[in-house]
Length: 209
Length: 262
Image (cartoon, rainbow over all chains, first blue to last red; front, side):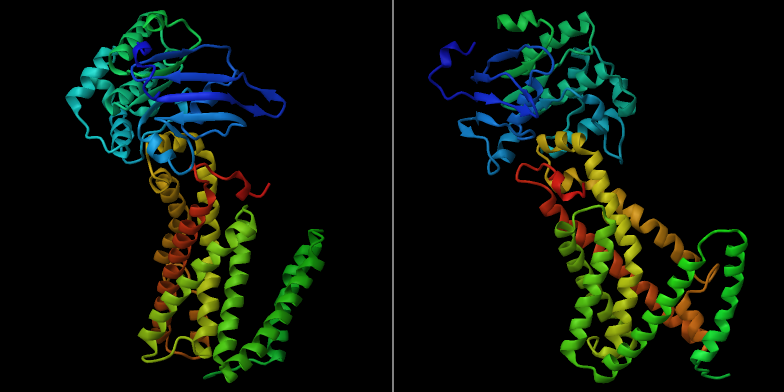
């Protein structure tokens, strides 16, 4: 994709980004993503890929380089506007919590949508869940009892409902078996256009896209 | 026995009862007797001095001196809470002091307005005992509330970042930490209030009854005192946390780790 849109402003541009913590220095990241692109970032763990995703969202500081979102340099003034246009599937899903007043999976989904000012639609949600091989009844289960694989797919459903300009997906298949991974790849292709995906595994189908 | 006023001989005589804990400590070889004696001596001297200067402050009743006293009490209270909050003083002192100031103003205004019709709440006779009572009784809950909030937001870092990245305001993203710290701070106080009169009689009330006041009058003061310090404390904690939250996060909504004591 993307090849025909080279002259248009990229949605996301990463220029010479580098992280360092103590003695450790990450690789240098250079990425240009246009509308509709799927960009897969491979590399050994600890190479700074998750830090890159967090840096785009203004959650991690970087020592070198610049990040541009929608043509604007990410800074304190525009970070909130930029965050409103990005969906994020974090890697460490075990830390996510449903709100105290409704601790079900449904409560988790509704809370994130409310924060993003998006109306909740049950039919749409159930449809997306079934595309990822999740049962409707999962919505009633306590969010804290879900497995990582289930959380991962709920997180993807939230990304799809939020329908933002860019998706940042950190290891979207790390806790899934082969069959479900394939389902996720299909789901991303269909619903999450313009995604920056971090993955150890080969998401060959997306790569060709 | 009406309006009996004790003198220092009475106090020395009554304090002889302390010989019993001293004897028990000695027998148990606790090595605490020296500390005990120093503490009680300190208390005696401090209260003796307070008695003298409070008498003059109330007698003179000079507005700027009253306000100076109030500022002193507020800073001392904020310092006590701040040093126990496990946060850096240069960060937390100002929010707590402002919280105490507003909490005191509002509750003492109501107290004096309701009880001493037309009384000026900045008059030394009211300001000095009421400010000490309101702020003194607020200390414990204020420490618990502030400590608990900053502990919660430190532990909640990752899930908060997810909410912030999804577009939540800081207020929304820290709401649960805030709610649970308010519960930590005030549930014990509220439970305590429900037991007043049933299990224990507060010290002020005991003093008034012994001094010859009608118990049914003494309770009226007691009710207003509890209403006053509870309100003062709630206002203090809400304002301190509101102000502290604004400076505890940077422009990206990330918690500034340097507000914590290392």
